[in-house]
Image (cartoon, rainbow, N blue to C red; front, side, top):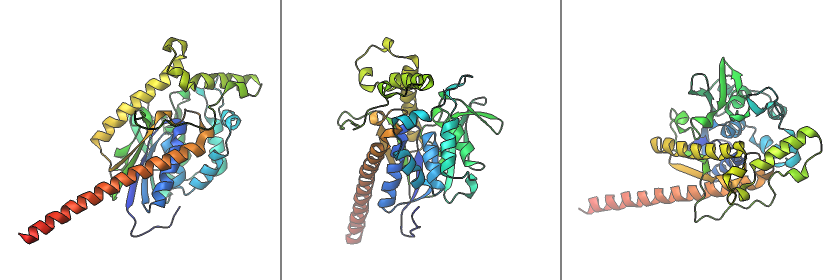
Length: 323
């Protein structure tokens, strides 16, 4: 984490939900640092809570090094099938791997103010974790419905914060900063934008290890990640889970833009949904680069608008002086 710069613009950073596309959050953070901005508080939902939590703890370098070293086999090895219902995967292996990187911390003692957003299923409302165990809050926030089992914590049954608030800007509004930067990971790709083309393939069945559990996981992943075929194949040939994923992404994008319209940040970074699939963590390097580039473009637009407004104010002051 960089040293504080008294002259730097302060930022409230909002990191949205969206699976492995959340590696773009790392690129956004690196870009903000390189451009001289100081992140003073973070709110995150799902993968945004995970990346944001590690950054707030001053441990993003460790997380980035770990995730960028993952290959397809490593990613699949972190998916522990659940045979008791509630979700396809238990999520225990993922949390064990994260705990091996850093020790748990209490959120209120982190160097940067942090909020993890989850959803309480029983009460049907958002929950903002601003104290207590960092890992318990992250585990609740990343519990994608039907994919990872819900998490029991503080008497609540928690699922992915993106269910109700995919880009939780409202969780940063108590902080006063120079600007708010929000990252939406479920944006539709612009018709004018160049499509994202990963140099590595999506997780594939034909590279599977041969034990039965791994084969079952790979069959699931393969069906999930056939991005190109999805565009040209009748939906009846695709799994219910695949259609559910696309439906959830569409729903979250709509909810995100409704929320963003109500609490409009100064900078919104739109990461297209074709930037990476739900489990494509082996593409981390490329998705991080994509996030960096998108953030830089957004900051250039923001700063250009600021300069134009300043010039307008200056011109108006000259006119008043002359009159």
